[in-house]
Length: 96
View 1 (tube, rainbow, N blue to C red):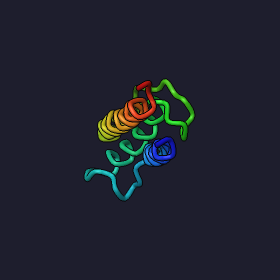
View 2 (view 1 turned 120 degrees about the vertical axis):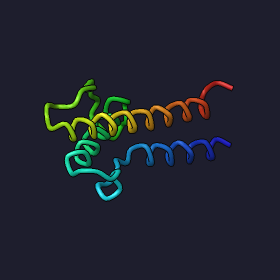
View 3 (view 1 turned 45 degrees about the vertical axis):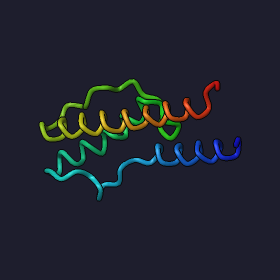
View 4 (view 1 turned 90 degrees about the vertical axis):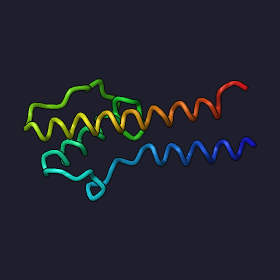
């Protein structure tokens, strides 16, 4: 049972640490797509992913409107995604 839990943790951590590749970005203008990519990285860092340097950045840098919308969308999606992984790991490894 312990080995199964350990394998699950490594699998979840591996998936959570992956940033979204540029070719899988949501459709939209280039500025939106680049902002989404940057926001996703910032979201993982803010949520505490061990694959990113910890960051308290929650606002996008000044840029075009499309970039800002994309950054916010990517930040929210990726931060929430990693936080779901953290909750799952806590359920698996938490006290019985």
